[in-house]
Image 1 (cartoon, rainbow, N blue to C red):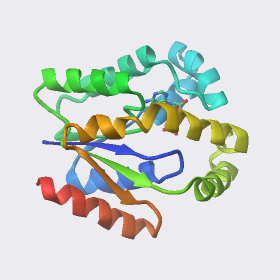
Image 2: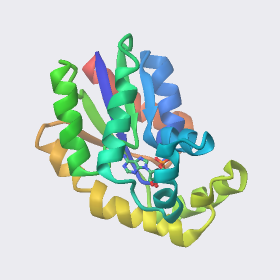
Image 3: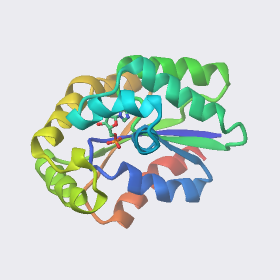
Length: 191
Ligand code: AMP
Protein backbone atom coordinates (compact mmCIF):
# COMPACT_ATOMS: atom_id res chain seq x y z
CA UNK A 1 0.00 0.00 0.00
CA UNK A 2 1.24 3.48 -0.88
CA UNK A 3 0.00 6.51 1.03
CA UNK A 4 1.15 9.87 -0.26
CA UNK A 5 0.85 13.40 1.01
CA UNK A 6 1.10 16.23 -1.51
CA UNK A 7 2.25 19.58 -0.14
CA UNK A 8 2.36 22.88 -1.88
CA UNK A 9 0.97 26.35 -1.60
CA UNK A 10 -2.40 27.08 -3.18
CA UNK A 11 -2.00 26.95 -6.95
CA UNK A 12 1.09 24.73 -6.87
CA UNK A 13 -0.75 22.04 -8.84
CA UNK A 14 -1.57 19.48 -6.14
CA UNK A 15 -5.05 18.74 -7.46
CA UNK A 16 -3.93 18.50 -11.09
CA UNK A 17 -1.11 16.12 -10.24
CA UNK A 18 -3.21 14.04 -7.83
CA UNK A 19 -5.63 13.37 -10.70
CA UNK A 20 -2.78 11.74 -12.68
CA UNK A 21 -1.20 9.93 -9.76
CA UNK A 22 -4.44 8.34 -8.57
CA UNK A 23 -4.87 6.69 -11.98
CA UNK A 24 -1.27 5.64 -12.32
CA UNK A 25 -0.97 4.07 -8.87
CA UNK A 26 -4.61 3.15 -8.29
CA UNK A 27 -4.97 5.37 -5.25
CA UNK A 28 -7.91 7.15 -3.72
CA UNK A 29 -7.55 10.93 -3.88
CA UNK A 30 -8.78 12.90 -0.87
CA UNK A 31 -8.70 16.70 -1.10
CA UNK A 32 -9.90 18.42 2.06
CA UNK A 33 -10.49 21.62 0.05
CA UNK A 34 -12.79 19.69 -2.33
CA UNK A 35 -14.60 18.10 0.61
CA UNK A 36 -15.22 21.51 2.17
CA UNK A 37 -16.46 22.93 -1.14
CA UNK A 38 -18.79 19.96 -1.60
CA UNK A 39 -20.24 20.59 1.87
CA UNK A 40 -20.63 24.30 1.17
CA UNK A 41 -22.45 23.60 -2.11
CA UNK A 42 -24.81 21.21 -0.35
CA UNK A 43 -25.45 23.59 2.55
CA UNK A 44 -24.44 21.09 5.24
CA UNK A 45 -23.62 22.17 8.81
CA UNK A 46 -19.98 21.40 8.12
CA UNK A 47 -20.11 23.59 5.01
CA UNK A 48 -21.69 26.46 6.93
CA UNK A 49 -19.03 26.20 9.60
CA UNK A 50 -16.15 26.08 7.10
CA UNK A 51 -17.35 28.80 4.76
CA UNK A 52 -16.26 31.91 6.67
CA UNK A 53 -12.74 30.53 7.20
CA UNK A 54 -12.38 29.58 3.55
CA UNK A 55 -13.76 32.93 2.37
CA UNK A 56 -11.06 34.73 4.34
CA UNK A 57 -8.31 32.38 3.23
CA UNK A 58 -7.87 31.11 6.80
CA UNK A 59 -7.49 27.48 7.74
CA UNK A 60 -10.60 25.70 9.03
CA UNK A 61 -10.06 24.63 12.69
CA UNK A 62 -8.16 21.38 13.19
CA UNK A 63 -10.87 19.55 15.11
CA UNK A 64 -13.36 19.95 12.25
CA UNK A 65 -10.84 19.16 9.53
CA UNK A 66 -9.34 16.11 11.23
CA UNK A 67 -12.76 14.55 11.89
CA UNK A 68 -13.81 15.14 8.29
CA UNK A 69 -10.63 13.58 6.92
CA UNK A 70 -10.83 10.51 9.13
CA UNK A 71 -14.47 9.96 8.24
CA UNK A 72 -13.57 10.15 4.55
CA UNK A 73 -10.78 7.57 4.89
CA UNK A 74 -13.13 5.29 6.81
CA UNK A 75 -15.63 5.44 3.94
CA UNK A 76 -13.14 3.63 1.68
CA UNK A 77 -11.96 0.40 3.31
CA UNK A 78 -11.42 -1.02 -0.18
CA UNK A 79 -8.80 1.60 -1.10
CA UNK A 80 -5.39 0.35 -2.14
CA UNK A 81 -3.80 3.52 -0.82
CA UNK A 82 -4.48 7.25 -0.59
CA UNK A 83 -3.25 10.56 -1.92
CA UNK A 84 -3.84 13.24 0.67
CA UNK A 85 -4.07 16.61 -1.06
CA UNK A 86 -4.23 19.66 1.20
CA UNK A 87 -4.02 17.62 4.39
CA UNK A 88 -2.23 17.77 6.78
CA UNK A 89 -1.73 21.55 6.93
CA UNK A 90 -0.78 21.88 10.61
CA UNK A 91 1.42 19.92 12.99
CA UNK A 92 -1.63 18.79 14.98
CA UNK A 93 -3.20 17.47 11.77
CA UNK A 94 0.03 15.62 10.92
CA UNK A 95 0.17 14.05 14.37
CA UNK A 96 -3.49 13.05 14.17
CA UNK A 97 -2.94 11.52 10.73
CA UNK A 98 0.07 9.51 11.92
CA UNK A 99 -1.90 8.20 14.87
CA UNK A 100 -4.99 7.41 12.79
CA UNK A 101 -3.09 5.65 9.99
CA UNK A 102 -0.80 3.93 12.49
CA UNK A 103 -3.80 2.24 14.11
CA UNK A 104 -4.79 0.92 10.69
CA UNK A 105 -1.27 -0.31 9.90
CA UNK A 106 -1.15 1.93 6.85
CA UNK A 107 1.58 4.50 7.47
CA UNK A 108 2.46 7.36 5.16
CA UNK A 109 4.92 6.25 2.52
CA UNK A 110 6.18 9.66 1.43
CA UNK A 111 5.31 13.33 1.44
CA UNK A 112 6.17 15.44 -1.61
CA UNK A 113 6.13 19.23 -1.81
CA UNK A 114 5.57 21.04 -5.11
CA UNK A 115 7.70 24.17 -4.92
CA UNK A 116 6.85 27.38 -6.77
CA UNK A 117 7.37 31.07 -6.09
CA UNK A 118 4.56 33.23 -4.73
CA UNK A 119 4.26 35.70 -7.59
CA UNK A 120 3.88 32.90 -10.13
CA UNK A 121 1.24 31.27 -7.95
CA UNK A 122 -0.74 34.48 -7.52
CA UNK A 123 -0.85 34.81 -11.31
CA UNK A 124 -2.04 31.20 -11.68
CA UNK A 125 -4.69 31.51 -8.98
CA UNK A 126 -6.14 34.77 -10.29
CA UNK A 127 -6.40 33.09 -13.68
CA UNK A 128 -8.03 30.00 -12.18
CA UNK A 129 -10.46 32.24 -10.28
CA UNK A 130 -11.81 33.58 -13.55
CA UNK A 131 -13.08 30.14 -14.56
CA UNK A 132 -13.43 28.17 -11.31
CA UNK A 133 -15.77 30.66 -9.66
CA UNK A 134 -13.80 30.17 -6.43
CA UNK A 135 -14.02 33.47 -4.56
CA UNK A 136 -10.88 32.62 -2.59
CA UNK A 137 -9.00 32.64 -5.93
CA UNK A 138 -10.29 36.04 -7.03
CA UNK A 139 -8.78 38.40 -4.49
CA UNK A 140 -5.02 38.87 -4.20
CA UNK A 141 -5.24 39.79 -0.52
CA UNK A 142 -7.01 36.52 0.31
CA UNK A 143 -4.52 34.58 -1.79
CA UNK A 144 -1.60 36.21 0.05
CA UNK A 145 -3.30 35.35 3.36
CA UNK A 146 -3.47 31.69 2.27
CA UNK A 147 0.29 31.83 1.57
CA UNK A 148 0.81 33.36 5.01
CA UNK A 149 -1.18 30.52 6.58
CA UNK A 150 0.98 28.07 4.64
CA UNK A 151 4.25 29.70 5.76
CA UNK A 152 3.16 29.85 9.39
CA UNK A 153 1.32 26.58 9.87
CA UNK A 154 2.16 24.18 7.03
CA UNK A 155 5.83 24.90 6.27
CA UNK A 156 6.92 23.50 9.69
CA UNK A 157 5.69 20.09 8.52
CA UNK A 158 8.81 19.87 6.39
CA UNK A 159 10.95 19.25 9.47
CA UNK A 160 8.23 17.06 10.98
CA UNK A 161 8.44 14.65 8.03
CA UNK A 162 12.20 15.08 7.53
CA UNK A 163 12.59 13.70 11.03
CA UNK A 164 10.76 10.58 9.76
CA UNK A 165 12.80 10.52 6.54
CA UNK A 166 9.62 11.00 4.55
CA UNK A 167 9.99 14.48 3.08
CA UNK A 168 10.71 15.09 -0.60
CA UNK A 169 10.38 18.20 -2.70
CA UNK A 170 10.32 18.84 -6.41
CA UNK A 171 10.31 21.91 -8.65
CA UNK A 172 6.66 22.66 -9.34
CA UNK A 173 7.36 24.91 -12.33
CA UNK A 174 7.16 23.30 -15.77
CA UNK A 175 4.60 21.55 -17.91
CA UNK A 176 2.05 19.26 -16.25
CA UNK A 177 3.84 16.26 -17.80
CA UNK A 178 7.25 17.38 -16.56
CA UNK A 179 5.96 17.71 -13.04
CA UNK A 180 4.18 14.34 -13.20
CA UNK A 181 7.51 12.80 -14.31
CA UNK A 182 9.32 14.40 -11.36
CA UNK A 183 6.69 13.06 -8.97
CA UNK A 184 6.70 9.54 -10.37
CA UNK A 185 10.51 9.46 -10.15
CA UNK A 186 10.14 9.96 -6.40
CA UNK A 187 7.17 7.61 -5.96
CA UNK A 188 8.58 4.73 -8.05
CA UNK A 189 11.37 4.48 -5.57
CA UNK A 190 8.82 3.08 -3.05
CA UNK A 191 7.17 0.49 -5.29
P1 AMP B 1 -7.56 24.06 -1.09
O1 AMP B 1 -8.58 23.67 -2.09
O2 AMP B 1 -6.70 22.92 -0.65
O3 AMP B 1 -6.73 25.26 -1.53
O4 AMP B 1 -8.36 24.52 0.22
C1 AMP B 1 -9.24 25.61 0.20
C2 AMP B 1 -9.49 26.09 1.62
O5 AMP B 1 -10.09 25.03 2.38
C3 AMP B 1 -8.25 26.49 2.40
O6 AMP B 1 -7.85 27.84 2.14
C4 AMP B 1 -8.74 26.32 3.84
O7 AMP B 1 -9.59 27.38 4.22
C5 AMP B 1 -9.61 25.06 3.73
N1 AMP B 1 -8.82 23.83 3.98
C6 AMP B 1 -8.54 22.84 3.09
N2 AMP B 1 -7.80 21.89 3.67
C7 AMP B 1 -7.60 22.27 4.95
C8 AMP B 1 -6.88 21.72 6.05
N3 AMP B 1 -6.20 20.56 5.96
N4 AMP B 1 -6.92 22.39 7.23
C9 AMP B 1 -7.60 23.55 7.36
N5 AMP B 1 -8.26 24.14 6.35
C10 AMP B 1 -8.27 23.52 5.16
